[in-house]
Each structure stands twice: as structure tokens, then as C-alpha cells.
Image (cartoon, rainbow, N blue to C red; front, side, top):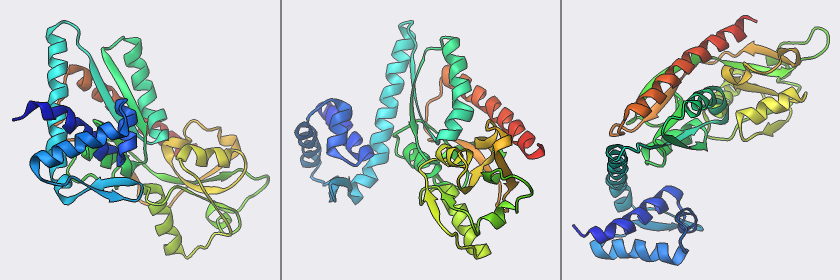
Length: 303
């Protein structure tokens, strides 16, 4: 084994995760030419092309796709070694990388992380906001350690721990007097839609096709929180997960249970993800927060 290639393999991993030499260079505080040189060094050493051009970025070649899992596992193990040595030195520290959608981060992660910070747990958090499908993909590719996602997302090879089951609700501005049902208002008021490819958008599109509803106008939003902000401001009808509505003043909203399947929210990890006592404590507290979230969503439905 040529150990001098390990730094070059780290550069390969960052390029694969970001899909861009320039972005990998930014994250590693290097120049793009230095990153490209390291990638070429690995490719020339093994005589295999790991990347192909893809517009302004790059994508993994078939050989790169085949090698990515092994490279990811290599650096997972390396991180584990560094954590073990820190523990043996009496200075344990864990870096936990997470991906979650905005409303799941606010509803589940914030209270748990707040508790651990107040207890001065030896852990550092690196949190990325992503929809459920991207969160699953990033866990698979090793870009993050843990992902919070709705169960219909990708990630068939991941270890998944259910946290709670939540329904989806129609939500719209509260009107004066006796207002028609939100499903009827869909035919006359703007429809708020999440990004194409997200779990919420797929559910919405399937419902509209099934009911043969054509909205009069649409407003595309980038997140569930932004969808709720539009509705709270008095505009639009949207399909939202129940947890996102538990802390919104009901006096400003009309809410109805949607005729779509409730979905579990799951915590996802890779099969070889190394758990230490700090991570186990974090996961246990997250599971407890999931149970509280389910209670809050039930109370919302009964209000």
C-alpha cells in the first residue's frame, strides 16, 4: 500500500461528494489545480478514470461509483481511529455530521442538541439542511453520518430507526365566516408546492392527479418552513407535514387532514457507522424527542 496516496484519496472523496473540483478545493482550503493534480495522481497510479465531465462539474465514472463505498469506509475507519486515540488520551471528542429538513431540524434536533450543549457533552455538530431524499443520498455516500428523513425516501441499504409517524395536512389562511373546505379552495387559491423530487411534492402531485385538480396558480417554495410562512402571511394552500404546524398559531390557519398516507420519520445511518457512548446518548435522546413529537402532532389533530 502506498500510504502517500491517502491525502489524494481524501481529495477524491471530497470531489465525489461535492460534484465539483472548485467546491472540494473551497472545503479543503486548497486551489482547484491542487485538487485536480491529486485526482490525476490517483487515476494515473491505478490506471483508471474516476470522474467524467458533467457540465461545469464532474460526476463519478462507473469505476468511481464502484470505488466510492470502499473509499468512504476507509475514512470512516480513520475517523474512528482518531476518536479512539482522543479517548485514550483523556480528551474524547466526537464530530457528528447530520442532514435533516428544516422543520425536522427545528422540531427534533434543536431540543436534543441544546440539551447536550448544556451538559457540555464532548461532541461537535455539523448540520446540513436537506430534503428527505437528499439526506438519504448523502448518508449513503458518506457525506453525513446521520440523516432524518421521511420513510418513502431513498436509502434502501441504510440502517433505519423509526422515530414517529406523522400525517400530512392541508393548511391555508383562516378566512372570516364559514369558509369552504381547503380541498375546495385548492380550485380557487394559489397552490404552494415544495421542490420537485421531494417527498412532499411527490405526494402532492399524486393527489392532484388522482383528484383531477388543476390549480389556478402555483407558488414554488424551497422548504416546509417557507410554505408555512406563506400561509401564515395569508396566501396559498399547501400540503404540510404535521410536525411543521405544531408551533404555529392556529388562530391564523385552517387545517384539515389530507387523504394521503401518513409517513414514518426515520433516523438513517450506514451499516458500518461506528457508535460510541456519546452517539448512543444522542440517538436515545432523539428517539425520546420523536415520541414527544408524535404526541404534539396528535394534539394538533384533536384541536
